[in-house]
Image 1 (cartoon, rainbow, N blue to C red):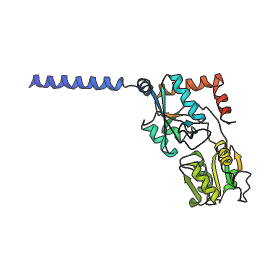
Image 2 (image 1 turned 30 degrees about the horizontal axis):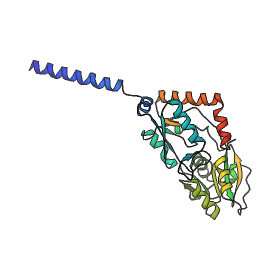
Image 3 (image 1 turned 135 degrees about the horizontal axis):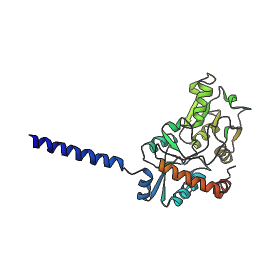
Image 4 (image 1 turned 90 degrees about the vertical axis):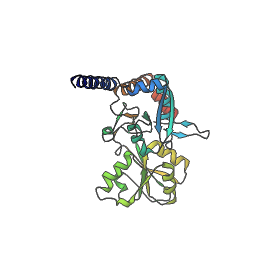
Length: 265
């Protein structure tokens, strides 16, 4: 019996050491990406000039150029997946993708569940309305009481909820959420909603594409943070590498040059 106990003890110690070794030397996510040779990026490709799909089916836009350059400087290929904006955070949390590149603002609320790179761009928002609508705005609060649309899961949606709905200025049923901005534009043109709140450059592009829409107000009052790349929480080596590349691109003037190429101020 004593000999049997010794065998059980030795086995338990072996298993404990083996398990501890496996946990201690588990590959960080940067190493996984390097070994795979590919960076998998999630986006919501309905937001030009940041991300969209051209007639040939290629992902184009400032964010798309950015992640391809990041991948190039990391020495890996880049695969881009088109997803609903409101699914991107969960996808990077579960490591179904390595990064989110979707004109996403790195807010404190989102930072509770994912990590963010250093900001690569700062933006304005815009309220869009129909050319047939008699809507005049001097501040975002002028949207009170209106039927207002926005993209699901965005900072703009959070702003509407906090500043218009929770304050009682706008009924809950006056908020219309859209997975894709182009669908919101169609509803706006048809008079099903009064306003659409999105980032300013995509708003201007939407107005350029749909001539029966116009900009009612451009503002920074609804902007909470700079645009960042989102990555899995706690992956410090991956974050350090992404930050290094973005800082490099800033110093070289690549960021500003590419923004101008896409018409981003």
